[in-house]
Amino acid sequence: MAALGWLTPHRRSATARSVLAGEASAEAARKTSQPAPEPQFPVPGDEHAAAFFDLDNTVMQGAAIFHFGRGLYKRKFFQRRELARFAWQQAWFRLAGVEDPEHMQDARDSALSIVKGHRVSELMTIGEEIYDEYMADRIWPGTRALAQAHLDAGQRVWLVTAAPVETATIIARRLGLTGALGTVAESVDGVYTGKLVGEPLHGPAKAEAVRALAAAEGLDLSRCAAYSDSHNDIPMLSLVGHPYAINPDTKLRRYAREREWRLRDYRTGRKAAKVGIPAAAGVGALAGGTAAAVALHRRRR
Image (cartoon, rainbow, N blue to C red; front, side, top):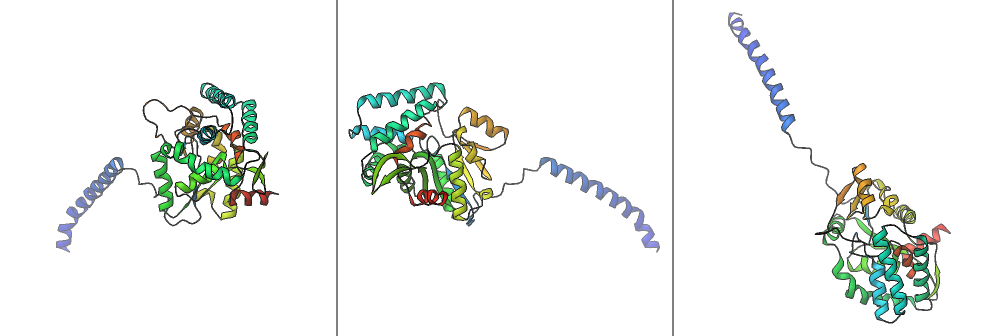
């Protein structure tokens, strides 16, 4: 007991000092620690997750339909006056930064009249050539890398665009993506009729297409990602658990910051100008359906 009595005062004092030292050390560690690393994303092997990418100014610089139109003009599908009118619509949007319903309707009608009577297979073949001529060099490497990260994780990656579904499908295939949702134009026996199936895949329609595709494919939207440059795609971005603003316009940048969405900007030098009206949404009427788009249309009927 004497020995224990000799140790007790020192032991008690040492224990108190140890507690104080431990608490001080823990507090210092807490103050100087780095934030916990975010969970890995995309999550490898998550079969219920996918990624949805807008096309114009998100995956590709400029509007796909504008480049497609250049290719058709080169092949004498329409006259110089129609090209001039389309160019004016492009310039108006770049200055105003908003869509005009009259311009959208005019662009849509022009596109439908241009392809009416042509075979879908003909436009697909021409689309392949136009991709090589005008689009291949306009893919944003940064966005392409994001898409590849999802593919490497074993996830499916879809383009979702108001551009013609044939054009979108060609681009998706060239980039090694899963597929594409785009605006569908009616065709009978492989020939365009000059009418749309439904409406251009734009704004809320994109969100509905993504929702329907997710249900058909067994996807959990809370585990999915979506990428876009435009505030018009806020409905689509709001559907998923991982929304990204890519090369965002002013309205989307503000909206994304308010909600702490992630932002990526792959433009260099001066802020990239919009090339083509999202009403190219309307011009997106050129196409006729991929299997996924047709399946969604049939399911709605």
